[in-house]
Image 1 (cartoon, rainbow, N blue to C red):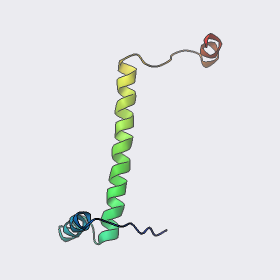
Image 2 (tube, rainbow, N blue to C red):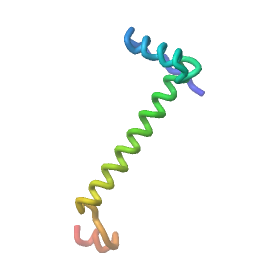
Image 3 (tube, one colour):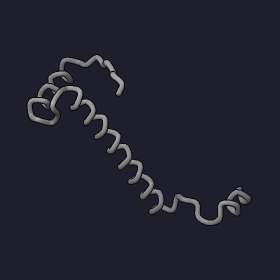
Image 4 (cartoon, rainbow, N blue to C red):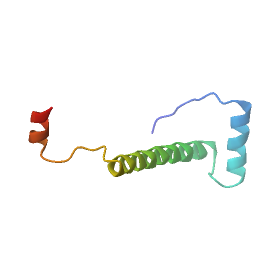
Length: 72
């Protein structure tokens, strides 16, 4: 496991302290890890929703890849 040192504003530091106090994580590092995991999950969900929207709008290519390449 690697270690990362990140400067925090006083407001962010207070938020993390409150999250530790409320049981979100056992310590500051765990809260930070959970926040990063949550962010990554949210980005993955956004990507899926965007892809679904593009499919619904017909913004995808369909058919044989070789035939599509010939057309391009």
